[in-house]
Length: 394
Image (tube, rainbow, N blue to C red):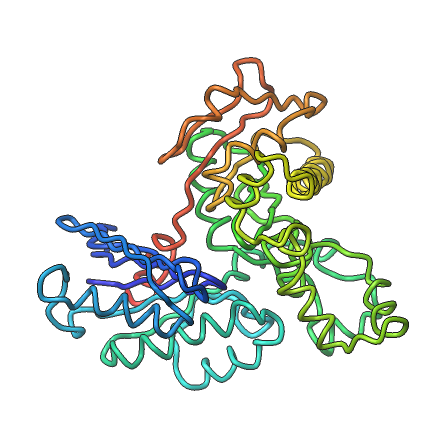
């Protein structure tokens, strides 16, 4: 069975075509920096590798480029869209409606649209991926894999907010958690590597969106993102944790509308709000040149991650390993060093030489004396989505 996986994110599209159940990758690629004139598209098969820089203003154009590569007479890997039997989609927010992998129909699409307000930078992009895929792969089953599903094991004391209980009962306002497909995949890989039956680990997913999960014995116990994907760590354009009194002050004292505040917290804050740059590669480059605002932003980013490591180690009453994953977590030795510096109280000791190695597979980067394992585990949400899609259909 051939399953195409589309991970349509806030500023990127990852895609992989699998032969299942072998998990053989037929082709893969990435569209990144969507919305800019110097966006990049990458396509790789067993025989071809293509990298292009071009103007990709939106996700529709990006996905159309991907499909054109798949069908191309010279570099394509399929002759007809009918060869693909299923398309698995990452969907960020399932709300209280979706707690497991689901075959997509019009009712499901309508419900996903109703959740736009809870994940405004993601669910619309996820939905767009579904619509475009339906137009190109009309005979394939469209399947949604929800980021919130892995976090259904979070206990009530962690997911319930200290507001009147009626809002949980009547409106399902609670912590949902996100990036669950990634956290599930890397935690399972780490637990297998550690070879221990009882495990306490912290998975640190750092990309344009960032989150951390406390994972005990393979189950999500707490998570840094909450009702929506804005809280917790400092992200590319999202603020992470802020005092909610700031929102009322902006509205009541400075004349901002609620829509303006929401847009600011979602699209104008985070690393972008601190530096003017949303891409960490640019921020690190500027910091190396002596840009003090960029250096401060990096320090703030690492400080926030450290706070969550401390809190999750406390709630799990122990820690076996921390895992860095996703674009920044896997590739930024600078951020990993900032996070792991001055953490000796927890027994976290980074081997700087190992840390500078570009890891393409699970890699240990701690010293021999470190009590806590420090791992880089490359995430593969696409494999996880393909697995769940195949299992649903079979």
